[in-house]
Length: 90
Image 1 (spheres, one colour):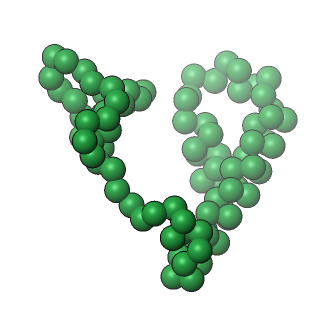
Image 2: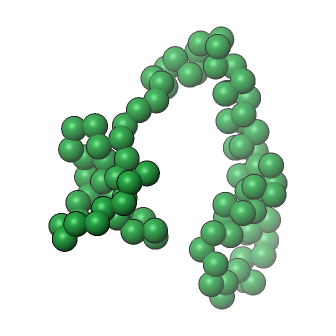
């Protein structure tokens, strides 16, 4: 992932490059990957579909836990709680 260092910060897409702003600053990335229809139907991507389902279950479990302890998380200064909790649920 590339960082934008110039005076002008871009957001949006130019050609195959997407510019966006995140908590880490202004970033840029290229478009790529496999067609979604192929991932959903091609037998070669069966393992990817299984991994996606597992990740979805971990995310749902993390959400259930976060919802149950929401009052304690309100004052948390850490913005990466969600990703760390999902990793532990996996």
